[in-house]
Each structure stands twice: as C-alpha cells, then as structure tokens.
Image (cartoon, rainbow, N blue to C red; front, side, top):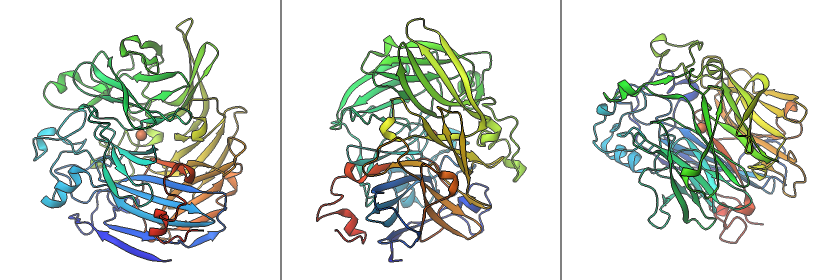
Length: 508
Ligand SMILES: [Fe+2]
C-alpha cells in the first residue's frame, strides 16, 4: 500500500477509554490517511467507477458528562474505484464546532444525552439548541459536491468528494435557512433537485425546501405540526414529497423545564404528509396510519391514485425490550439504539390520493433497517432494497439482507464473528441494464483481525460474499450512513487535473 498520513488532530480522550461507544468497534481515529492504491484481495471490477462515501461519528474529546454515539465529530471516509484500482482517504469535517473544540482542547457543547445547560458555550445548533453541529450523521452528493448533515439540524458542510477537503457550507446565495437542515436530504436522480426539511421547538415546528440542480434555494415553506416533533427522514416520488409526524416527541411538561426526554404515544396515530413538490406547506394532506416511529424510509413511488411508501415500522419505538449486554449503567441511555430493541421491520404504506385512506402491510418478519436502493430508482418504482441486520442490544450491523419486494424473497450475508459493516450503498455498473446490475458496497470494522476493509459484492448474488475486499490502512470506527456517487457525476474525475491523481491514482 502507498500510504501517507495527511495529519493528526488533537484528541483528549483517555488512554484505555472504556465507554461502550468509544471503545471496541467504536474506537475513534485521530489520524487522517491517504492511500493512492490500496491492497485488494480478489479482483475489483473495472466497471465499478466512482466513490463510496461514509460518514462516521468519531469523537475526539470526552463529553461534558455523558457521551452518546450520535454526538461524535464527523469523519468522512472515501473509497474511490477506477480502472480496477481503489484509493482511500479519511478526513475530519472542519465544522465550526470541531475547530472551536480543537482550539479549546475540550468539549464546549452538550450532547443528546446531556442537558443544554451543561454546555460551556451559550450558542450552538440543533433543534433543541446549544448542541454542536457535528455534521456526522449523513452524507449525500449533490451538484458534484458531498454534503454532510446533522440529525438535529444544522449546516450542510460541503466537501470535495475525492479529497474530502471541507470547502465551506451550503449558502444557497445567502438563503440557507436559519432553522438549519436535518439529516437525510434527498437527491432526485431525474430532476437533479435536492429536497430537505428541518424541525425545531417553535411553531410551525417544520419547514420544507427544494434546491435546484444548480444549487439555488427555489422553494421554502412552513409545515405546521401540532407541536415539536423528532422527524429523522423524508421520502419523495416523481411529483410529491412525503413528510411525517410520528408520535414520538419530547415530553412537553419536561420540555418546559429544559429537559429533553422523548416519549412514544401509542394512542396517537402516525401521520404521513403528502404535498406536491413545490406546493405551499399549508397544502399538505395528512394520512393517518398505525402508531409507530419511522427512523428511515426506503423509497416511495406513485402507483395510479396511490403513493406507495416503504420504510421500517418500529413495534417498540422506546426499545423497552432491548437488553444492553454491556455496562448496565448505560442500559437506559442506549435502549433505543438496537434494531432488535426497536423491532424494525420493512413495511409498506399505500396512501390513496382520491379516498384519503391509508392501507398498510408488513413486508417481512425479518428485523432489518438502513435500507439502501439503487439511487437511479429513488422516487420511482423499484424492486430491491439492501438493509442491515443488527447485533442484539448494540448499534452494530452484523450483515445485510437483499429484500426482493416483487417475490418477497431474501438473500442474506453475514460479515462473520467480530466483523461489523455499515450502510450498504448500491453502485450501478457502468452501462448498467437493470436495477441490480451493479455492486453493493460496505465498510467493515473487523475486531477479530484488527483491521478494516471495504467490501464489494455483486448485487445479483450478495449471499456468495464479496467479489473483492479493499484493505484500509487502519481499523476505522463503526459508522452508518453512506452513499455512492458515480464517477460521471464528479467534476474532474477523468481530466488531467483529476483530483484522484493527487491521491496517487495515475490518470489513463
Ligand atoms: Fe439516519
């Protein structure tokens, strides 16, 4: 391997840190690496062309009091594939909060398991305020730029998708909303638009917006909710956007005292809000459905008078049945993290635009979450999703399932003892002629071999195991959200000034 250390950031974490989510598979990194040509076991397909990007919650300072795994600073990993070779980089996102804490040498803001008044700084970000905008939740590529986001709402940080240099924040000509943007903005592969929402503690409690393919804010509207909510994801079809009002929210009586404690209200329905893509938020049509909380939707599409919406229904949104196998003093804080605790199952809602009725069905008894699809089918009819399986009690993925929604069949792959994966992005083959004509990619944390790899599966036969494994220079922390961007979407991917050359790949 042609390995270069790009830099090291200040970490004040203690030696021998025993926090359950800062040790073992979550041991954070402080080194930034670049590998021009990675060692590959197996053979990388030459029609795999583009980048796999993964965001990671990677803390570098002890929390003020209680660290939660959603608080860590953003580290993005990129594995680029071209001409049967792979390059790798990892970089911290230089958020305002990260830079301020590097200067201070300690945590300045409160995390999700702490009280806002625990923060040393009076300012901050997040729907509840006085949090650090860690930008460590999600990553998408829009208009040739990688955008990282934060689930509690904040800025969208702009990264060069090859070098991972932080190149500023989304500004949208000065129109970036003061309320911030939530994780899980969506890119429409046909129109090139970016759709987003945010949420907060003040009326109207949600906003929704549209960014044009050339990165301008072209629509922004209030969406009135009955009170503060904790939405995490959204969905879209060719003509409609689907927002949600799940009955899991901060306890109002405690919120008034500044305490942020979420409760699920099983006696209240979930509401799914449908509005034409650029309509006024007052035109949202709400559809009631069985009570649940949906962390992630998979996809949505139009089918005659109906909108078909697929996502993960939680039978136990408070994770009361979760059994945390580690230090029991953490059991309460972490009970909402495991897939088995939440009982997450693939589910379909059909929203009839003529009758206003909702029909719904469980698609499988298997417990999976974090379903990925071929992004070329986003918002359109589709057949396959690749979703992760979880380690009981932990926020860890031990394998994934390819769900065939047409036949109802499943194909499974398990990473192996002590090996944990991340979200399984779909990379269509160059010249792809079908939805699963391509590859499935994930990044592993292997505690048995003390290393990390990027695995490449043939999407048509994932159960056979990876066709190639790309060795990374260091064991990386477990992480979740990822995306794929084809080389053809990336500026400069094959020019003489190709940024890939700067990380050691020769240009053809
Ligand atoms: Fe998410």
